[in-house]
Length: 183
Image (cartoon, rainbow, N blue to C red):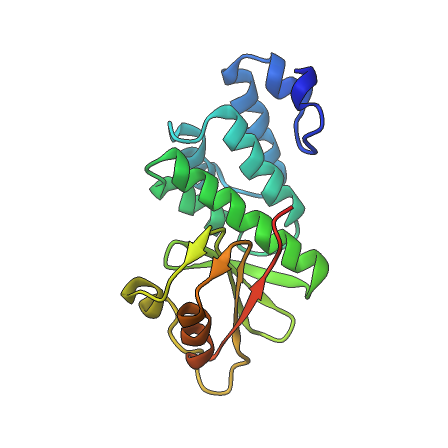
């Protein structure tokens, strides 16, 4: 416990309570955020979300409190099929939190495919993906559909690196790329 005390969102309860108690506490916090039982159940019962990942996810949602669509992000948890996907989902929400705090206020949480998104003050879609390195592949090109005519450029946030072809591909499709340095 003393070796991880520097982590900002670690709660002593998480480290000392039985897993069922942590899940119950997370359910209570989700309910306080206005997430329905039907939307929270897949997250709380998903074996890939350990109690610590559940808590990380709930902490991330708490930072987005007041935005419409918290249930949308919770529903994404129903499709998580590995610990890596659970961590990806948490990392995406953390990037949205960073964008919300540092760049432009967000509202209306949603998803673009399986990627958490929101809408910024200008009405642009903001998608967040914590990748190490992203290449311009068919999957990336299919994801980066151009914004509808008259809409501001969509924003792709990452804390990883984009290859030059990926950066060029997003820009050609009308997206702004925002690369955050890793914390």
